[in-house]
Image (cartoon, rainbow, N blue to C red; front, side):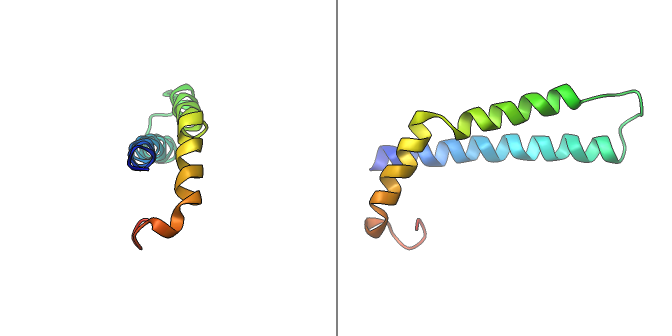
Length: 78
């Protein structure tokens, strides 16, 4: 169960980092980026990376194991 929690937390941190980077690129595209600059390919790549992390078998298995044992997790982790 500790390994599942580790995989879950590490993957979530990566997903959050990619999501934040995508948000910042999107914000820049809408506000301050020069009109000729185009970061749509970078934004698409970040989105793809985020999706790939969120759909790995290891991450899914970790979520399934944690959910199956949710009653044994402390209140913060539930």
